[in-house]
Image (cartoon, rainbow, N blue to C red; front, side, top):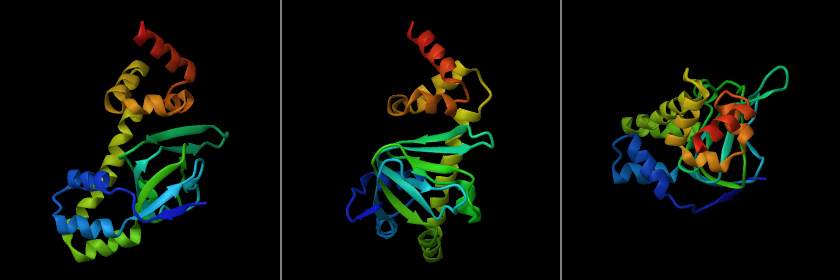
Length: 195
């Protein structure tokens, strides 16, 4: 069951928006008024396969896993999210078509939600809110660690350099899947770097 809160701290999300573009204090106040605070229990699916992604979420506290299930039943981790990340299914959100993915809470989490309806409402009030769409670009850029053509060691080192907290926060099987390798390969890579 999702519970709705009224006052999760907005400092992190305001800083994130400032990185996306030039927002005045008035813009930020208007924008944050459209955010809804949600407490998400562990294992809850923010986005489910076959459902349309209606919102984007800013992680205030907690962690989420984005994955797909293949025809053979294998789970392929597409992305791993922690505090200060934006969670969304880019394709489903922009097309408003059903998602092929699952976005699941790995632990009890707190997020700030901006719905597609509120985003469109904001865009009608001022062109400045079109800068929020840069969140989508960041989501795509985060995928680069996983899909770049490099050795397992290079992929792990890239993750270690860009998002070291992920290594401590998620089970190795999820990290291995995200990096496109078997858990035993990841264990081997970790041992080689430790020696």
